[in-house]
Length: 517
Image (cartoon, rainbow, N blue to C red; front, side, top):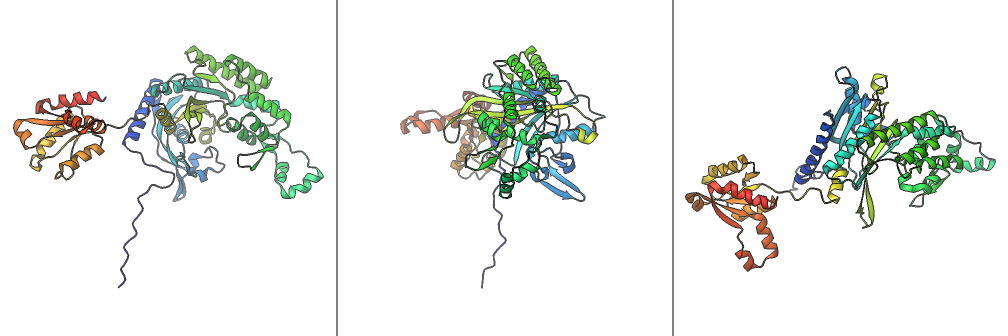
């Protein structure tokens, strides 16, 4: 008779693009976020926690780099509503600012920390769930709010252990680029009108992308997307992308935007206008934008930000004006900023490179308007939590090996109450401790458990110790060191275990823990 198969057992594995975090990682993240929260609190920001789930309507079309944001979120339909996991912490803030606008103070200053979800293709180091740490000011039109965000970001980086000199915060302004584009005579929506095709081009267009390039106007967004690649492709690569196109590393040809050489020159003048100091950079930018009002407004805002920061002691050793910062230029409406770590690490092939960006933000005056119909100025910054943790680890300031609890071993089931009392004494003294709750029959297994828990100390009390009112205190860290480095004779000669009066147990454990603090 054929054997009937039982139900298929599920695979014990995390879904693609997700990961699990264990003790040391969770503790390190919490410790880092606590330090950042202290800085934010000191600046007068209040904590905010919002639901992980928002309506798709509330999330809107602000998912970065995704033309159709519903494709980039985890969404589902419930009755007549579409709901989705939040993809960042800014969209929920916009909803909160609109929903509670009669109750919240203006300006409203808040910080938020928590997981966000992106329904994107996972890859090495790219997960679908990750942590963000945001701080935003809603309702302040003054660039003093932008300057404050930059100063606060600098303080937060130093608070978690990024030394001055190992980071720089770069500041730019979307309005300056708008001024450059307007100086070229480009309208708000179109960068240029398509030129007529020649007869030959018209014939070749049947088999080429030229049809699309010549029957559609090039939008500002096309140009902004290419400018955003400046840090990857450099000046030569950007010139090609703004012009006729270029081949990528694989040899595939990437169509260019199709700007003229004169237009490209002015864009590159803007991108490379950083001077020897903030004053020189601002002077170069003023020359680049000419007399275009929106460009001059952007330059003046950068000048104000530099002055406000300088007055507080945040000089160019920490925060600089840098026109090459182009993050989110299709999203932000004014100043933009990015925190870059400048120390070197080795990549996967052993080559030195700078660590790169760990935070960014800017002014987004249009986001809350979606709900209220009125412009509400806002500015903020978002720290990539996992990136910053990786940076601290690269600097040797990441999570050290987690020290486990003191383990009280069980030698006699009849004395469980005594062992619980020992654990309680340690806990009441502020020492992390636990009693072994597995099968106590094999004492060796208890020590193996303590080793797996990375416990520094084991407490042993058998019948003899109980009668004498003493306990054995075993230094497990010393024992491991001796086992690794010493001969058998040396191992026997070392005192890893001491007998002390029960009343001295807490003091003895504290003394041992202090050695390894």
